[in-house]
Amino acid sequence: MTEPFPTGRAAALARLADFTPRMGRAYAEGRNTDPGPGRRCDVSWLSPAIRHRLVTEAEVVAAAVAAHGPRPAEKFIQEVFWRSYWKGFLELRPGMWTAFASARDADRAAMRGNALARAEAGATGIACFDAWVAELRETGWLHNHARMWFASIWIFTLKLPWTLGADFMLRHLRDGDAASNTLSWRWVAGIQTPGKHYVARADNIARYTEGRFDPVGELEEDPRPIEAPPPPRPGALPPADRLPDQPFALLLHEDDLHPESLLPAGARVAAIAGVAVPEARSPLGCSALVTGSVGAALGDGLARASARWGVPAPRLALADLPGWAAGHGLPVVTPWAPVGWTAQALAASGVPMRRLRRDWDEACWPLATKGFFPFRESIPTLLGRLLPDQAIASAR
Image (tube, rainbow, N blue to C red; front, side, top):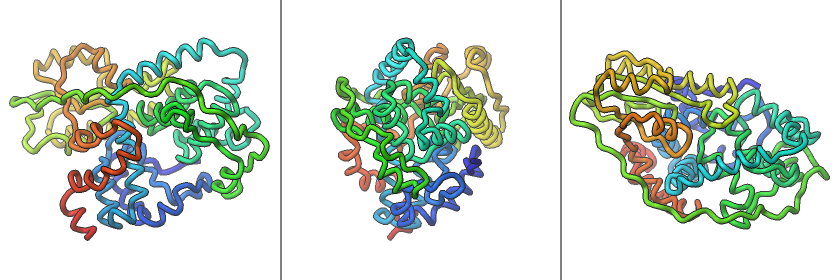
C-alpha cells in the first residue's frame, strides 16, 4: 500500500509539478472515485506536505490557476480552501478544540464492551470499513470520500462516539490537523451544520469504489443526526505580532515549515531550532508512522532554514525550549500555530514568542464565520488578493 507522500520540500514540489496537469477537468471528474491503492490517479498526495507547509496553499493554488484557469480548476482550488476554512472556523472559536478534547476523554472513560477495540482493529465484519482501517494504519492516509464513509459508518452503523472516531483518525493521519479533522467529523455527525449529517450508503460506496465494495444490507442508511448544541458564535481573530527590528531566534514547528516564504528578505535570523510534539495529538499518542513523517518534515524545514541563514538548526525536545531561548537571549519568532496541540504546547512552554501569520491566513480565517458556502463566494476575491501576479496573468 505504499503511496508517494513527500516529506520534504523538493519532493513536494516535484509531486506538485507532476499532478498540476490533472488539477482541472480530470480532478473534477475523478476526485470522488476511489479505485483503491495503487490505482489512484486523481489524488495529488500533497495533503501532508500542505498540512506542514512544505509547500504553501498559495503555491498549490497558483499552479492550478496558471495551468488551467480559476474556473476549470475550481473543484481542486475549493479543496485547498476547505482546509483554510476549517482552520479559520476553529481559530475564531478556540473553545471547540478544548470541548472536543474533554468530550473525547469522557467518551473513552464511559466505553464498555469491545466494540471500540473491534472498530480500531478493523475487525467489524464490514469489509469496506475494515479495509479502510487497515489502509489508514499502514499508510497514514485515506481517500477523502473514504474518510466520509468511514466516519458515517463509525457513527451511525457501529454507533460509536464520534469523538473517538475523530481521535482514532487523528492518531493515524499523516495530514491530520485539529481543525480539519475535528470539524469534518462534526459535519458527518450532523452537529457542525445542525441537522445535516452525511450518511454512507451501499450503492454510493459500490459506485465510487468501482465495485470493490458493496456493503448492501450492512449499513444503517436512515439514521438521525446526532443531537448537540450548535457551534458557538465566532470571536475575533487574535492579532499577529510584528517582526522585531533586531536579530532574533527562529523557532519552527510542524504547522509551518517554509520559513523562506514567511520571513522577508534580509530577516536577521541569528539562531534557529525546531520543536514538534505529534504525540500530543491524543492522550494515546500517535502512530509511529505519523511521528516519523512529522520528524522527516521538520528535519527538512530545519535543513533549509540552516542553509538559508547560515546558522545551526537543531531539533529540540519541548522541555529544552526554555533553556534554548534563555541561552540565546534573543526575541523568539515563530510561525503562527493554529488552534491545536502545537499551539497548546508552545503556550505551555512559558517562552514569550512573537507569532507571525501569513497573508493567506490573515485573508481567509476572518471569513470563516458561517458555513463553507458563504466562504466559497469569497474565493475569487481571495485569488485576486493572494496569488502572484504571474499566476493570474498565465490564466488569462
